[in-house]
Amino acid sequence: MVMEENDENYSHSKRLHVFINELLEKSNVPPKDLSAISVSKGPGSYTGLRIGVSSAKGLCFALGIPLISIDTLDAFAHQIEISDGFIIPLIDARRMEVYSSVYDNNFIKIRETKAEILSKNSFEDYLKKSKVYFLGNSNDKTKSIIDNPNAFFIDDKLPSSIQVGKLAYEKFMSNDFENTADFEPFYLKEFIGNKLKTN
Image 1 (cartoon, rainbow, N blue to C red):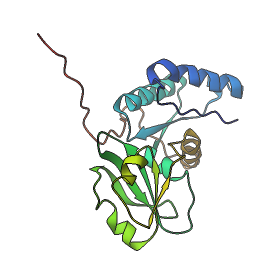
Image 2: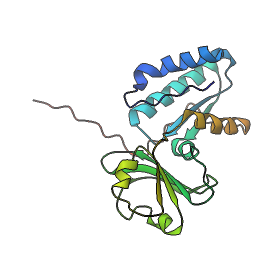
Image 3: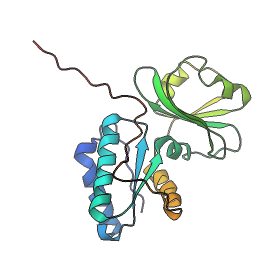
Image 4: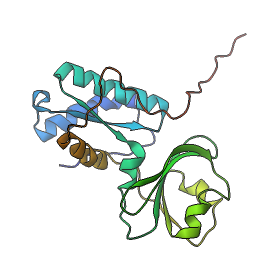
């Protein structure tokens, strides 16, 4: 059974536990039968990561099962398959900034995850060598800056819980678990909140 939803108006604080309950009920799997909990650890929305990881940790403690974390961009890269070239998943940060990593055609991460401001020279080292496949919710602003015949934009892909699950299963089989008590999301950047106005 596949249950997945992408919605810009999705509120983790209001819907996450509803979705978890619906998934367990429709899968006919009681919580006591779970062997581990997996979570997408980031980078991404500060609030979304904080709520998601807190919920996952709470379930792990309550059920006495291990926690598995998956890099969001790792899972994102697995949304497509290519025979050659590079995969660059992009997650929108703010203004012209994105979170990105670079992967080869075997999903090996060949450049670390960065928060970076897009410019016409972004990713030029990879664009000079081969085809580059960009995917994510930053494609529109990336297209407006990067004009290169080796740049291909995949517009219908977003981070997938299905891919998180597949990668988590591999970690589960290898007993690759997190220290649940100490685990923190991969925020990548410091949280920037809005200051309250004072009279």
